Image (cartoon, rainbow over all chains, first blue to last red; front, side, top):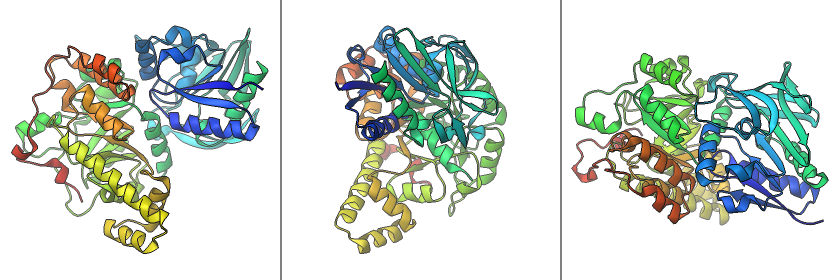
Length: 197
Length: 292
Protein backbone atom coordinates (compact mmCIF):
# COMPACT_ATOMS: atom_id res chain seq x y z
CA UNK A 1 0.00 0.00 0.00
CA UNK A 2 1.10 3.55 -0.74
CA UNK A 3 2.37 5.66 2.15
CA UNK A 4 -0.18 8.20 3.44
CA UNK A 5 0.62 11.64 4.80
CA UNK A 6 -1.12 12.58 8.03
CA UNK A 7 -0.62 16.16 9.19
CA UNK A 8 -0.98 17.33 12.78
CA UNK A 9 -1.83 21.03 13.06
CA UNK A 10 1.20 22.04 15.12
CA UNK A 11 0.94 25.71 16.13
CA UNK A 12 -0.37 25.11 19.58
CA UNK A 13 -2.09 22.56 21.84
CA UNK A 14 -1.34 18.92 22.66
CA UNK A 15 0.50 18.41 19.38
CA UNK A 16 3.26 16.03 20.53
CA UNK A 17 0.61 13.80 22.16
CA UNK A 18 -1.23 13.48 18.83
CA UNK A 19 2.01 12.83 16.96
CA UNK A 20 3.00 10.03 19.36
CA UNK A 21 -0.47 8.48 19.41
CA UNK A 22 -0.75 8.59 15.61
CA UNK A 23 2.65 6.90 15.25
CA UNK A 24 1.65 4.19 17.75
CA UNK A 25 -1.67 3.67 15.98
CA UNK A 26 0.06 3.32 12.60
CA UNK A 27 2.51 0.85 14.08
CA UNK A 28 -0.27 -1.20 15.67
CA UNK A 29 -2.04 -1.38 12.31
CA UNK A 30 1.21 -1.91 10.39
CA UNK A 31 0.30 0.97 8.10
CA UNK A 32 2.87 2.99 6.22
CA UNK A 33 1.91 6.42 7.55
CA UNK A 34 4.02 9.55 7.62
CA UNK A 35 3.08 11.86 10.50
CA UNK A 36 3.90 15.50 9.74
CA UNK A 37 3.64 18.53 12.05
CA UNK A 38 1.92 21.29 10.05
CA UNK A 39 2.75 24.96 10.51
CA UNK A 40 3.08 26.20 6.94
CA UNK A 41 0.42 26.39 4.29
CA UNK A 42 2.37 24.70 1.50
CA UNK A 43 2.15 21.32 3.18
CA UNK A 44 -1.64 21.27 3.52
CA UNK A 45 -2.40 20.44 -0.11
CA UNK A 46 -0.26 17.29 -0.01
CA UNK A 47 -1.96 15.76 3.02
CA UNK A 48 -4.21 12.71 2.95
CA UNK A 49 -5.48 13.59 6.39
CA UNK A 50 -5.28 16.27 9.06
CA UNK A 51 -5.62 16.04 12.84
CA UNK A 52 -6.56 19.19 14.76
CA UNK A 53 -5.42 18.90 18.38
CA UNK A 54 -6.79 20.12 21.69
CA UNK A 55 -5.99 23.72 22.60
CA UNK A 56 -7.84 27.00 22.28
CA UNK A 57 -10.06 27.13 19.20
CA UNK A 58 -9.80 30.95 19.15
CA UNK A 59 -6.00 30.81 18.95
CA UNK A 60 -5.94 27.95 16.43
CA UNK A 61 -8.31 29.79 14.09
CA UNK A 62 -6.29 33.01 14.20
CA UNK A 63 -2.98 31.27 13.54
CA UNK A 64 -4.40 29.25 10.62
CA UNK A 65 -5.96 32.35 9.13
CA UNK A 66 -2.79 34.45 9.51
CA UNK A 67 -0.80 31.68 7.85
CA UNK A 68 -3.25 31.79 4.93
CA UNK A 69 -4.03 28.06 5.19
CA UNK A 70 -7.70 28.34 6.16
CA UNK A 71 -9.19 27.70 2.70
CA UNK A 72 -6.94 24.72 1.99
CA UNK A 73 -7.56 23.16 5.39
CA UNK A 74 -11.22 22.74 4.55
CA UNK A 75 -10.25 20.81 1.43
CA UNK A 76 -8.31 18.06 3.22
CA UNK A 77 -10.19 14.83 2.57
CA UNK A 78 -10.01 13.31 6.06
CA UNK A 79 -10.02 15.42 9.23
CA UNK A 80 -10.08 14.37 12.88
CA UNK A 81 -10.55 16.98 15.62
CA UNK A 82 -10.39 16.56 19.39
CA UNK A 83 -11.87 19.16 21.76
CA UNK A 84 -10.83 22.48 20.14
CA UNK A 85 -10.40 20.45 16.94
CA UNK A 86 -14.01 19.30 17.16
CA UNK A 87 -15.08 22.94 17.52
CA UNK A 88 -13.06 23.80 14.40
CA UNK A 89 -15.01 21.16 12.41
CA UNK A 90 -18.48 22.26 13.57
CA UNK A 91 -21.01 24.09 11.46
CA UNK A 92 -22.45 25.97 14.42
CA UNK A 93 -20.72 27.05 17.66
CA UNK A 94 -22.26 28.46 20.82
CA UNK A 95 -20.03 30.82 22.87
CA UNK A 96 -17.51 31.59 20.18
CA UNK A 97 -15.88 35.01 20.22
CA UNK A 98 -17.06 37.67 17.71
CA UNK A 99 -14.36 37.27 15.03
CA UNK A 100 -13.92 33.51 15.40
CA UNK A 101 -14.68 31.22 12.45
CA UNK A 102 -14.81 27.45 12.08
CA UNK A 103 -14.36 25.19 9.06
CA UNK A 104 -18.11 24.34 9.13
CA UNK A 105 -17.51 20.87 7.71
CA UNK A 106 -19.64 18.76 10.08
CA UNK A 107 -23.36 19.18 10.60
CA UNK A 108 -23.10 19.59 14.33
CA UNK A 109 -23.90 22.28 16.83
CA UNK A 110 -21.31 22.48 19.61
CA UNK A 111 -21.09 24.50 22.83
CA UNK A 112 -17.62 25.68 23.93
CA UNK A 113 -16.56 25.12 27.57
CA UNK A 114 -20.00 23.65 28.18
CA UNK A 115 -19.10 21.90 31.42
CA UNK A 116 -17.67 25.11 32.90
CA UNK A 117 -14.17 26.07 33.95
CA UNK A 118 -11.19 23.84 34.79
CA UNK A 119 -12.62 22.93 38.20
CA UNK A 120 -15.34 21.03 36.29
CA UNK A 121 -12.90 19.11 34.08
CA UNK A 122 -13.20 15.36 34.64
CA UNK A 123 -12.19 11.91 33.47
CA UNK A 124 -14.22 8.70 33.30
CA UNK A 125 -14.50 5.37 31.52
CA UNK A 126 -16.92 5.59 28.63
CA UNK A 127 -18.50 3.09 26.27
CA UNK A 128 -18.08 4.10 22.65
CA UNK A 129 -18.87 2.35 19.37
CA UNK A 130 -15.12 1.69 19.22
CA UNK A 131 -15.02 0.05 22.65
CA UNK A 132 -14.67 1.22 26.25
CA UNK A 133 -12.06 3.92 26.73
CA UNK A 134 -10.85 6.20 29.50
CA UNK A 135 -11.96 9.66 28.43
CA UNK A 136 -10.44 12.94 29.66
CA UNK A 137 -12.57 16.09 29.41
CA UNK A 138 -10.64 19.37 29.78
CA UNK A 139 -12.84 22.49 29.73
CA UNK A 140 -14.64 20.39 27.16
CA UNK A 141 -17.32 21.31 24.65
CA UNK A 142 -20.65 19.49 24.31
CA UNK A 143 -22.23 18.51 21.02
CA UNK A 144 -25.79 19.79 21.34
CA UNK A 145 -27.25 18.39 18.13
CA UNK A 146 -26.20 16.62 14.93
CA UNK A 147 -27.55 16.40 11.36
CA UNK A 148 -29.09 13.23 9.96
CA UNK A 149 -25.89 12.25 8.14
CA UNK A 150 -23.84 12.31 11.33
CA UNK A 151 -23.24 9.03 13.12
CA UNK A 152 -22.92 9.19 16.90
CA UNK A 153 -19.99 7.19 18.27
CA UNK A 154 -20.20 7.95 21.99
CA UNK A 155 -22.47 9.53 24.54
CA UNK A 156 -22.00 10.53 28.15
CA UNK A 157 -25.16 10.74 30.24
CA UNK A 158 -27.27 11.26 27.14
CA UNK A 159 -24.98 13.88 25.65
CA UNK A 160 -23.12 13.36 22.38
CA UNK A 161 -19.34 13.37 22.87
CA UNK A 162 -18.02 11.75 19.68
CA UNK A 163 -19.35 11.47 16.13
CA UNK A 164 -18.37 11.00 12.49
CA UNK A 165 -19.67 12.15 9.12
CA UNK A 166 -19.04 11.01 5.60
CA UNK A 167 -19.70 13.73 3.06
CA UNK A 168 -19.16 12.74 -0.54
CA UNK A 169 -15.50 11.76 -0.73
CA UNK A 170 -14.66 13.35 2.59
CA UNK A 171 -14.59 11.91 6.10
CA UNK A 172 -14.69 13.79 9.41
CA UNK A 173 -14.33 12.57 12.99
CA UNK A 174 -14.87 14.66 16.13
CA UNK A 175 -14.55 14.02 19.86
CA UNK A 176 -15.18 16.36 22.81
CA UNK A 177 -12.65 14.50 24.96
CA UNK A 178 -8.96 13.72 24.36
CA UNK A 179 -8.43 10.12 23.14
CA UNK A 180 -4.81 11.09 22.34
CA UNK A 181 -4.06 11.20 26.08
CA UNK A 182 -5.21 7.70 26.95
CA UNK A 183 -5.69 5.42 23.95
CA UNK A 184 -4.81 4.67 20.34
CA UNK A 185 -8.30 3.38 19.51
CA UNK A 186 -9.70 6.55 17.91
CA UNK A 187 -6.50 7.19 15.97
CA UNK A 188 -6.47 3.63 14.64
CA UNK A 189 -10.09 4.02 13.58
CA UNK A 190 -9.28 7.29 11.82
CA UNK A 191 -6.18 5.92 10.06
CA UNK A 192 -8.17 2.94 8.76
CA UNK A 193 -10.77 5.35 7.35
CA UNK A 194 -8.06 7.10 5.33
CA UNK A 195 -7.34 3.87 3.50
CA UNK A 196 -11.01 2.99 3.05
CA UNK A 197 -11.86 6.43 1.78
CA UNK B 1 -6.67 15.96 44.66
CA UNK B 2 -6.57 15.37 40.96
CA UNK B 3 -3.61 17.22 39.57
CA UNK B 4 -3.55 15.05 36.46
CA UNK B 5 -6.38 17.10 34.96
CA UNK B 6 -4.38 20.25 35.68
CA UNK B 7 -1.37 18.75 33.92
CA UNK B 8 -3.66 17.94 31.00
CA UNK B 9 -4.93 21.52 30.79
CA UNK B 10 -1.30 22.70 30.74
CA UNK B 11 -0.68 20.31 27.81
CA UNK B 12 -3.48 22.04 25.89
CA UNK B 13 -1.76 25.42 26.41
CA UNK B 14 1.55 24.36 24.85
CA UNK B 15 2.87 26.52 22.04
CA UNK B 16 0.80 29.41 23.33
CA UNK B 17 1.18 32.80 24.97
CA UNK B 18 -0.37 33.62 28.34
CA UNK B 19 -0.76 37.35 28.91
CA UNK B 20 -0.94 39.44 32.09
CA UNK B 21 -4.07 41.59 32.14
CA UNK B 22 -5.43 44.00 34.72
CA UNK B 23 -8.97 44.51 33.41
CA UNK B 24 -11.62 43.25 30.97
CA UNK B 25 -10.45 45.60 28.22
CA UNK B 26 -6.92 44.15 28.33
CA UNK B 27 -8.30 40.61 28.48
CA UNK B 28 -10.31 41.15 25.29
CA UNK B 29 -7.23 42.55 23.51
CA UNK B 30 -5.29 39.45 24.62
CA UNK B 31 -7.97 37.04 23.42
CA UNK B 32 -8.29 38.83 20.08
CA UNK B 33 -4.52 38.65 19.60
CA UNK B 34 -4.64 34.87 20.05
CA UNK B 35 -3.54 34.40 23.68
CA UNK B 36 -4.27 30.89 24.99
CA UNK B 37 -5.02 32.20 28.49
CA UNK B 38 -4.84 35.38 30.54
CA UNK B 39 -3.35 36.03 33.98
CA UNK B 40 -5.54 38.37 36.03
CA UNK B 41 -3.65 40.69 38.33
CA UNK B 42 -4.04 44.09 39.95
CA UNK B 43 -0.95 45.73 38.47
CA UNK B 44 1.51 44.44 35.90
CA UNK B 45 4.95 43.66 37.37
CA UNK B 46 6.64 46.86 36.11
CA UNK B 47 4.00 48.92 37.94
CA UNK B 48 4.52 46.77 41.02
CA UNK B 49 8.21 47.68 40.87
CA UNK B 50 7.41 51.37 40.42
CA UNK B 51 4.88 51.68 43.25
CA UNK B 52 6.25 49.18 45.76
CA UNK B 53 4.45 48.21 48.99
CA UNK B 54 2.98 44.81 49.81
CA UNK B 55 1.44 43.22 46.75
CA UNK B 56 -1.42 40.75 47.25
CA UNK B 57 -3.96 38.67 45.36
CA UNK B 58 -6.30 40.70 43.10
CA UNK B 59 -9.69 41.96 44.18
CA UNK B 60 -12.19 39.16 43.33
CA UNK B 61 -14.35 41.73 41.51
CA UNK B 62 -11.53 42.27 38.99
CA UNK B 63 -11.09 38.54 38.47
CA UNK B 64 -14.82 38.04 37.90
CA UNK B 65 -14.88 40.95 35.47
CA UNK B 66 -12.08 39.34 33.46
CA UNK B 67 -13.72 35.90 33.60
CA UNK B 68 -16.92 37.40 32.23
CA UNK B 69 -15.08 39.16 29.39
CA UNK B 70 -13.26 36.22 27.76
CA UNK B 71 -13.78 32.55 26.85
CA UNK B 72 -10.13 31.45 27.19
CA UNK B 73 -8.76 30.19 30.56
CA UNK B 74 -8.28 32.80 33.29
CA UNK B 75 -5.42 32.36 35.74
CA UNK B 76 -4.70 34.45 38.84
CA UNK B 77 -1.79 34.95 41.22
CA UNK B 78 -1.58 34.32 44.96
CA UNK B 79 1.36 35.03 47.28
CA UNK B 80 3.94 32.31 47.91
CA UNK B 81 2.71 30.23 50.86
CA UNK B 82 -0.63 32.08 51.13
CA UNK B 83 -2.96 29.10 50.97
CA UNK B 84 -6.02 31.14 51.93
CA UNK B 85 -5.59 33.38 48.89
CA UNK B 86 -5.37 30.13 46.91
CA UNK B 87 -8.60 28.90 48.53
CA UNK B 88 -10.30 32.13 47.47
CA UNK B 89 -9.05 31.78 43.91
CA UNK B 90 -10.29 28.18 43.84
CA UNK B 91 -13.74 29.35 44.98
CA UNK B 92 -13.70 31.92 42.18
CA UNK B 93 -13.06 29.03 39.78
CA UNK B 94 -9.95 30.44 38.16
CA UNK B 95 -8.50 27.85 35.79
CA UNK B 96 -4.96 27.96 37.23
CA UNK B 97 -3.45 29.55 40.36
CA UNK B 98 0.02 31.04 39.97
CA UNK B 99 1.84 30.88 43.32
CA UNK B 100 3.96 33.80 42.31
CA UNK B 101 7.13 35.58 43.41
CA UNK B 102 5.80 38.71 41.72
CA UNK B 103 3.55 39.22 44.76
CA UNK B 104 5.02 39.75 48.22
CA UNK B 105 5.69 36.34 49.80
CA UNK B 106 3.49 35.35 52.75
CA UNK B 107 5.72 32.52 53.99
CA UNK B 108 9.50 32.30 53.85
CA UNK B 109 9.65 28.62 54.84
CA UNK B 110 6.82 26.84 53.07
CA UNK B 111 5.18 26.97 49.70
CA UNK B 112 1.50 25.99 49.45
CA UNK B 113 0.71 22.28 49.82
CA UNK B 114 -0.84 22.20 46.40
CA UNK B 115 -2.01 18.60 46.59
CA UNK B 116 -4.85 19.72 48.85
CA UNK B 117 -6.47 21.72 46.05
CA UNK B 118 -8.63 20.81 43.11
CA UNK B 119 -7.57 23.90 41.15
CA UNK B 120 -4.20 23.34 39.42
CA UNK B 121 -1.11 25.43 40.25
CA UNK B 122 1.70 26.88 38.18
CA UNK B 123 4.90 27.83 40.03
CA UNK B 124 8.13 29.61 39.17
CA UNK B 125 11.64 28.17 39.25
CA UNK B 126 15.25 29.27 38.74
CA UNK B 127 16.72 25.80 38.31
CA UNK B 128 15.84 22.12 38.18
CA UNK B 129 15.85 21.62 41.96
CA UNK B 130 13.32 24.39 42.50
CA UNK B 131 11.13 23.08 39.65
CA UNK B 132 11.11 19.56 41.08
CA UNK B 133 10.36 20.80 44.63
CA UNK B 134 7.29 22.57 43.30
CA UNK B 135 6.21 19.50 41.31
CA UNK B 136 6.64 17.35 44.42
CA UNK B 137 4.33 19.79 46.24
CA UNK B 138 1.72 19.28 43.50
CA UNK B 139 2.38 21.94 40.86
CA UNK B 140 0.75 20.92 37.55
CA UNK B 141 2.81 23.34 35.49
CA UNK B 142 6.15 25.13 35.85
CA UNK B 143 7.41 28.42 34.52
CA UNK B 144 10.93 29.70 34.73
CA UNK B 145 10.98 32.87 36.84
CA UNK B 146 13.03 35.30 34.81
CA UNK B 147 12.93 38.76 36.38
CA UNK B 148 9.37 40.07 36.07
CA UNK B 149 8.66 43.66 35.13
CA UNK B 150 12.12 44.40 33.75
CA UNK B 151 11.61 43.83 30.02
CA UNK B 152 15.02 42.19 30.24
CA UNK B 153 15.24 38.59 29.00
CA UNK B 154 18.61 37.76 30.56
CA UNK B 155 17.27 36.13 33.74
CA UNK B 156 14.67 34.03 31.88
CA UNK B 157 17.45 32.70 29.65
CA UNK B 158 19.60 31.95 32.68
CA UNK B 159 16.80 29.98 34.36
CA UNK B 160 15.81 28.04 31.22
CA UNK B 161 19.45 27.05 30.73
CA UNK B 162 19.77 26.07 34.39
CA UNK B 163 16.77 23.72 34.14
CA UNK B 164 18.09 22.28 30.87
CA UNK B 165 21.59 21.65 32.22
CA UNK B 166 20.15 20.10 35.39
CA UNK B 167 18.22 17.64 33.24
CA UNK B 168 21.27 16.89 31.06
CA UNK B 169 23.17 16.02 34.23
CA UNK B 170 20.43 13.61 35.36
CA UNK B 171 20.36 12.00 31.91
CA UNK B 172 24.09 11.40 32.13
CA UNK B 173 23.75 9.76 35.55
CA UNK B 174 20.91 7.50 34.46
CA UNK B 175 22.74 6.49 31.30
CA UNK B 176 25.77 5.42 33.31
CA UNK B 177 23.45 3.83 35.92
CA UNK B 178 25.06 5.95 38.61
CA UNK B 179 22.48 5.33 41.36
CA UNK B 180 24.67 6.91 44.03
CA UNK B 181 24.81 10.24 42.18
CA UNK B 182 21.07 10.16 41.48
CA UNK B 183 20.34 9.59 45.17
CA UNK B 184 22.68 12.44 46.09
CA UNK B 185 20.87 14.72 43.64
CA UNK B 186 17.47 13.84 45.11
CA UNK B 187 18.85 14.74 48.53
CA UNK B 188 20.46 17.94 47.27
CA UNK B 189 17.25 19.03 45.54
CA UNK B 190 15.13 17.89 48.52
CA UNK B 191 12.80 15.93 46.24
CA UNK B 192 11.60 12.33 46.06
CA UNK B 193 13.86 9.86 44.32
CA UNK B 194 10.90 8.66 42.21
CA UNK B 195 10.33 12.14 40.76
CA UNK B 196 14.03 12.52 40.05
CA UNK B 197 14.19 9.20 38.21
CA UNK B 198 11.03 9.99 36.27
CA UNK B 199 12.54 13.29 35.11
CA UNK B 200 15.83 11.64 34.18
CA UNK B 201 14.07 8.96 32.13
CA UNK B 202 11.80 11.44 30.37
CA UNK B 203 14.72 13.77 29.68
CA UNK B 204 12.49 16.74 30.46
CA UNK B 205 10.32 18.08 33.28
CA UNK B 206 7.36 15.76 33.83
CA UNK B 207 4.99 18.75 33.52
CA UNK B 208 4.64 21.50 30.94
CA UNK B 209 7.25 24.26 31.34
CA UNK B 210 6.72 27.83 30.13
CA UNK B 211 9.13 30.78 30.19
CA UNK B 212 8.28 33.98 32.09
CA UNK B 213 9.81 37.21 33.28
CA UNK B 214 11.28 39.81 30.95
CA UNK B 215 9.79 38.84 27.58
CA UNK B 216 9.26 42.12 25.67
CA UNK B 217 9.63 41.31 21.95
CA UNK B 218 8.62 38.59 19.47
CA UNK B 219 12.31 37.64 19.29
CA UNK B 220 12.45 37.21 23.09
CA UNK B 221 9.51 34.81 22.94
CA UNK B 222 11.04 32.81 20.08
CA UNK B 223 14.40 32.71 21.89
CA UNK B 224 12.78 31.05 24.90
CA UNK B 225 10.93 28.61 22.62
CA UNK B 226 14.12 27.67 20.78
CA UNK B 227 15.78 27.07 24.15
CA UNK B 228 13.15 24.40 24.70
CA UNK B 229 10.22 25.76 26.76
CA UNK B 230 6.66 24.76 25.88
CA UNK B 231 5.21 28.28 25.74
CA UNK B 232 5.56 31.77 27.22
CA UNK B 233 4.03 34.12 29.77
CA UNK B 234 4.21 37.80 28.88
CA UNK B 235 3.61 40.33 31.62
CA UNK B 236 4.43 44.00 31.36
CA UNK B 237 5.94 43.51 27.89
CA UNK B 238 2.61 43.91 26.10
CA UNK B 239 0.57 46.50 27.96
CA UNK B 240 3.59 48.69 28.77
CA UNK B 241 4.50 48.98 25.09
CA UNK B 242 3.26 51.71 22.77
CA UNK B 243 0.95 49.45 20.73
CA UNK B 244 -0.35 46.53 22.86
CA UNK B 245 -2.73 45.10 20.19
CA UNK B 246 -0.01 44.82 17.59
CA UNK B 247 2.69 43.60 19.98
CA UNK B 248 0.38 40.97 21.52
CA UNK B 249 -0.42 39.54 18.08
CA UNK B 250 3.26 39.67 17.06
CA UNK B 251 4.35 37.72 20.13
CA UNK B 252 1.65 35.09 19.49
CA UNK B 253 2.84 34.73 15.88
CA UNK B 254 6.51 34.51 16.83
CA UNK B 255 5.78 31.88 19.48
CA UNK B 256 3.82 29.71 17.02
CA UNK B 257 6.52 30.11 14.33
CA UNK B 258 9.49 30.19 16.69
CA UNK B 259 11.86 28.29 14.41
CA UNK B 260 11.17 30.41 11.28
CA UNK B 261 13.34 33.59 11.37
CA UNK B 262 11.54 35.09 8.35
CA UNK B 263 8.20 34.93 10.15
CA UNK B 264 9.69 36.30 13.38
CA UNK B 265 11.20 39.13 11.34
CA UNK B 266 7.82 39.91 9.81
CA UNK B 267 6.14 39.80 13.23
CA UNK B 268 8.80 42.22 14.56
CA UNK B 269 8.14 44.93 11.95
CA UNK B 270 6.86 48.34 12.95
CA UNK B 271 5.70 47.48 16.47
CA UNK B 272 6.44 50.89 17.95
CA UNK B 273 8.26 51.31 21.25
CA UNK B 274 8.91 48.21 23.35
CA UNK B 275 8.70 48.69 27.13
CA UNK B 276 11.71 50.59 28.37
CA UNK B 277 13.28 47.82 30.41
CA UNK B 278 15.82 47.76 33.21
CA UNK B 279 19.31 46.48 33.93
CA UNK B 280 19.10 43.62 36.43
CA UNK B 281 22.04 45.04 38.43
CA UNK B 282 20.12 48.30 38.99
CA UNK B 283 17.11 46.59 40.60
CA UNK B 284 16.12 47.23 44.20
CA UNK B 285 14.13 43.99 44.45
CA UNK B 286 14.99 40.76 42.71
CA UNK B 287 11.67 38.95 42.64
CA UNK B 288 13.22 35.73 41.34
CA UNK B 289 15.04 35.27 44.65
CA UNK B 290 11.72 34.90 46.47
CA UNK B 291 10.67 31.33 47.27
CA UNK B 292 12.80 28.33 48.21
